Image 1 (cartoon, rainbow, N blue to C red):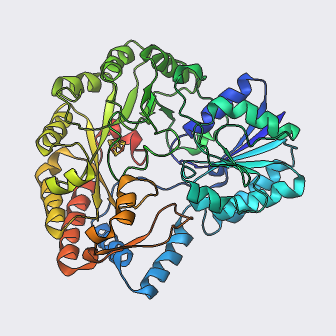
Image 2: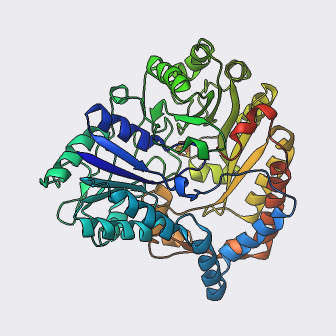
Image 3: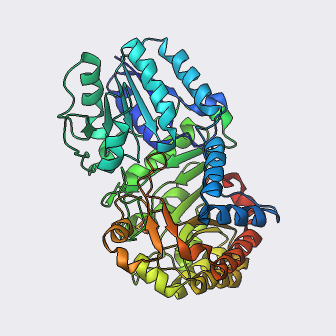
Amino acid sequence: MKVALVDLNNFSRYPTLSIGYFVAILRREGVEVEVCSPLNFGIHGYARTVRQSYWQRFSEFANYCMAVSTSGFINELRNRFKSWLRPGGGRDREVITQAVEDMLSKNFDVVMVSAYTMYRETCSDIAQLCVKRNIPVVLGGSGFYSYAMCEEWLEIPGVRALYSGEPEKNLLKLVSALATGEEISDIPGVVTRNNSFNPAQPLVELDSIPFPDFSDFPWENYPNRIVPVMTARGCEWGLCTFCSDVKTTSGRTYRSRTLDMVLSEIEKQQCHYSSDLFVFLDLKLNSNLALWRGLPEGIKKLPRPIRWTASVHVDSRDENGLSYTDLKRAAESGLVRITCGLESASRDVLRHMAKGVKLHRMSEFIKSAHKAGISVRITCMVGYPNETAEDVQETANFLRQHSQYIERVTLNRFANMPGTPIEEKLRKSRKDYPHILVKELDTLNGVFPYENRRMSRPSFLKAVYKLIAEVNSINRKPLLAKAFDFEGAF
Ligand code: SF4
C-alpha cells in the first residue's frame, strides 16, 4: 500500500510534527509513504514575529486601520491584497498543484492532505487531480473541529471525506479501508456527506505512538535544524474564552507523556537529525509541574547539550513552576527562549477572557526569566469585545514598563473563532455587545468576521498607535545571541 501525505501546514522553520507522527505510524506498519512539502518548491508558511525596522510601526498601524475600517471599498482592497500575499495565494496554488501532480504519477493508493483552511482552492485542485487518477483523497487539519467548517469543505468535488480529531489511533484502519474501497464512514473521526459529525476522541495513551519521523522533510531549506517535540496535548488551564487551540484537533483535554519517553525522543532525534535545537510545541509546558521541573535535569544528562524554547502560562496556582529558581534551572539546561500570553494588561479584560493571569505575577515572571538569561517573547491581543481605549493604553503602559526585559511581542487582533466561549457569547448575548456586528462564517480563514465600532473610534485608534509603537520599540532589538537561531521560529 502506498500513501501520499501532502503537508499544506508547511512551517518554514521546522518540520510539521503531526506529519512526522503519521509517517512514523504508517511506516511501522509497513506502509510505503511519501511526503510532499511545499517548502521544497519555494512555498513558505506564515512568518512569525521577527526583528522589525522603525518604519514598520507605520505599516502595522495602517494595516490595523484598514482592518477595522467600515468602508466596503477598503475592506475589499485589503482582502485582495491579503489573498495575494497569504501562503497558498498568488502563484503558490499553481506551484503546489503542479508538484502534487508530478508526485501522483508514482501511483499512490491513497492521498491524505493536511491543510490550513486558507488552502481551500489548492485542496480543490488536488482533489480534482485525484479524481482523474481514481485515487481516494481525505483532508484533515486543525480547522475541521466544527461542523460548520466540515459541511462547507465537503462540498469540494472529489473530496472523499474529512478527518476531525486526533487520527493516530485510526490512521492505519482509515488508509487500509480507503485503499481497498471499503466503507469508511464508521471509522471514528471520519466526516462524510452521509454520516454524522463525530470527531475522534482525544488520544490518551500518548506514549503508545512512535517517535515522529521527519526524514522526508527538506532539511536543507530550513534556516536551522530545529526539531519540534511535544510532551503533552491540551492545556492544564484550558479556560481562556478566545482560545481555539483547546477546541481544535489535539488541544481537547489535557494529557501528558512520561518524562522518560520525552527524554529518549530528544536523544534519538538529536542523533538522527544532527540537531541540538528543539522547539517544544506544548500549549503550556508548565501544565504538568513534575514533567516541567524534571526536564532540565534530564536534558542536562543528554550526551550533548541542547538549546530549546517553550511556551508557558503564567497562571495563578500557588506553584506554577515559574519562579526564578525554576527558570534558572531551565536556562542552565539550555532554555533560551520562552513565550507566554499576556494578551492584555487590563484587569477587566483579563477577567472577561478568563485568562487566569495576575499582573503582578506576570511582571515577576518576565523579570525573572530575563534575569535567568532567557529571551522573553509575549503575545498581546487588541480588540477583545469588552476592550476600551483605556484598556489598550494600559497594555501599552505595561509593555513600556517591561520593555527592557522583553525581546519580542506578537500583537494579534482578536479573532472570533468558531466554538470558543466568546464566539458563542457574541452570538447568544448580542445585547451585551451593541458595538459589535458578527458576520457569516468565513470558511477560507475559519473565523467569524466581525465589525467592532469601538475599534475605529479616534480614542481607540490613538491608543492602538501607542501600543503598536511600544511593540515596535521592543521588536527592533536584536535577539539574545544564544536565542538567535530561533528567530522567526517561535
Ligand atoms: S493558557 Fe493558552 S492554551 Fe491554555 S486556554 Fe489559555 S490561551 Fe489557550
